[in-house]
Image (cartoon, rainbow, N blue to C red; front, side, top):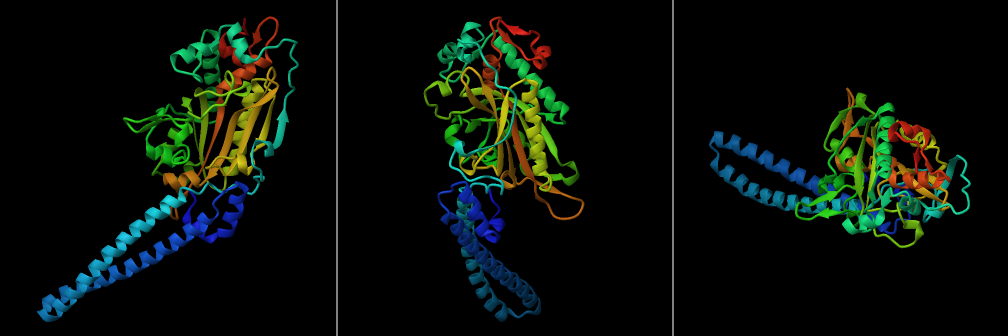
Length: 423
C-alpha cells in the first residue's frame, strides 16, 4: 500500500508511474488526496475542540476551589457543547479514515523508473540469456508423455483423487522432487538464508499484509469454516513473521527461505501450453525472502537474481532473464525479473522464477519497520523470489535431458537423487 504522504507530495510522479502499469483509474489518486485533506482538516478541528475542552475542565477545577459556582455552571454549559462537537468530529474522522483506507488499497504499487511500458508478456525486455538450447532427436517427447513412459508422474490418478492440476509423483519422480527441494534449500543455506518451516494456511491479516487480499482472493483456496487461506507461496507466511515488528537497523538485511507446497485456484485454459506440469493448482516451491534497508534493496534484488541464475546454471538449463513491463507486473511489485528456462520438446520458454522488490508497499501494510540507534522508525523494503518453483523445472529437466538410454540427471543433483538416470 502506498504511503499517503508520498501520494500527496508526489502526485504527478505517481500518476506517471501508474500509467506505466496501465492503471485504469487515475482519478482515484485525486480522490485519495481529497479524502486525506478532509481527514487532516477534521483532525485539526478535533484537536482544537479537544484542547478547548481540556482547558475548560481545568478552569472548572480552579473555579470550584475558589467557590465561584455561577462561573462554573456557565463553563459546564459550554463544555457540554464541546463534548458534542468532539463526538461528531470523531465520528467524521473515523468515517474519513475508513474511506481513505478503502481507496488506498485499490492503488497498485508504482513501478520503478527502469520498468518499461507495455501491455503484456510480449513487451517484456530480455536482459540476459545463457546456455545452449539442446537439439533433440526426432520423435522427442513432451514431459507429460515421458512421465507416463517412465511411470514417474501420474496426472490421471491425481485427477481421480483431487482433480486436474494435482499430479501424483511416483518412484523416481517423487525422489526427483525431494532431491530438488533439498538441493535448493542447501544452496539457499549456503547463501546465508535462514530456513523457515511456516504454516501453509494464513488468516486475512496475513493475506492483506503481503497484498494477496483484497486483490487475489479469487486465486486462493479459502477454508470457509475457519476463514483461512491456503498459501499461494511461502512469501506470505514468511514475510508476515515481521508484521507489526520493529527490527534493528543493524539486523538488515534479514534473509529467510522456506519450502512449502503452494496452492493456486487460478482459472486454467486448455491446450498444450498448460498441459502436464505447465500449470498446476498444487506445486512445490522454495522461496527466498529478504527485509532490506531502502538504500540496499536494489543491490540485494540483483544478488537474489544472481542466486536464482546460479541454480539454473547448476542444473545445466538454458535460461533467460526478463525485466517485466508495467502491464505484466503484479499489483504489489515495483520491479520484477522473471527467469525462464527453455523446454526443448515443447520448443518454448517456461517461467520458473520471479524475483521482485516491493519497496515499502508490503511493509506499509505490515507495519514492518526498522530503527537505528537514533531517529524514528521507518519502513523497510521487502523482496522475494522463487528459488525455485519445481513443476516447470522438472518439465525442462525431463524434456531437455531425454536420450535413447533414458533421462539423464544433472551432475549437481546426483548426490541428492542417488541415481544418474531415469530409465
